[in-house]
Image 1: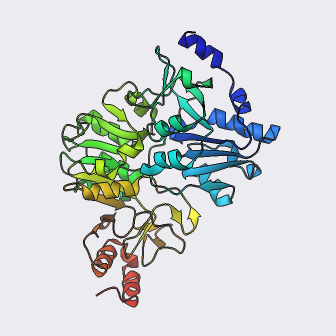
Image 2: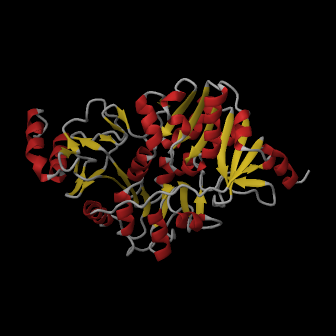
Image 3: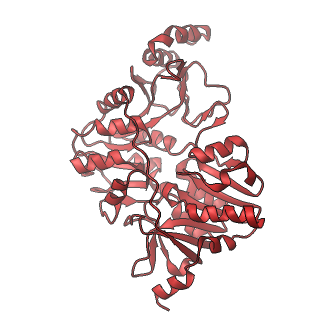
Length: 433
């Protein structure tokens, strides 16, 4: 049988794929664009209409609502979030979805060692002449899921870019597949307000020519990227490839020529952004999409001199504890790769890590620098790992500083309207010496 004949034999509808999912099965997909929404919705329809129950579905960074986010699926189809988007966040806080605590770098081994995966479901690019599908822009955990799953079901989308180093799946490994031509989800451009631009410019001053970058999601990392266009010989080694990185590569500020490993190549675990970015990745030999247990390994990150890591936070306390994934006990998202890159950057020769955020929230009524984290808040980056904290009022260097020195530095970059209040709290706690 030729590869094309085998393909046609295995081509069925999303509903027929859903019909193969059995009660009690555990299904899993990779991050963002890898989530096969058509198959997932068909599974949800089967739960609702045919009484299927006991199904678990592991996802990361949902990019649009999934049918099973609704409360009516509670106890029948359980979503487990490894890093949440808006839909999964609502389901977790509603009490009908679960969360897997983890560092991003550890996710492949956690799937391999602890999760029994019945079905790997994924969006892939079309089959090539050799019978292989590409996982597209998702290296991430796909390698581990492909090896571990007992059954593989694919949603083939001609719009999925083909990254040349992404995981490959041969038609012989596939139990069934369906086709969709829906447009890929895009990440709307972040709004670069004055505060984001100010913070971006502050951090850009700390990034020398030849540095290697990791940028997180949001307005501030995007602002940093935009502020770096006049730099030279920058490198990119990041968990998420973003549109600001495309800008740096196209204008010549980033060329990866100074990197000691993967020289000349941009390295990422996955990509999520605009259609322009997806077109940039497609068949581009300069982009390497690789497994996250390699990309986010702090020891690998640390091999790059002058590494610069930029991430965000919801609040930071006097000790330097960073919360980036909850508001009190209320779930916002996961740990992701923040700690991976904080640790990698501070271990790099000349490296620096920046946790950056506006000094206030809720129309300047709440300070994001606080004496103690909100009760129940999750510590993402611990006090012993934290390096630099940045707001629109400057940079507080915390690593190597005493508690008293940290408090003074943090208060100096808090919003002026909260500085007296914070100073009073620090003195009351007897930690300002």
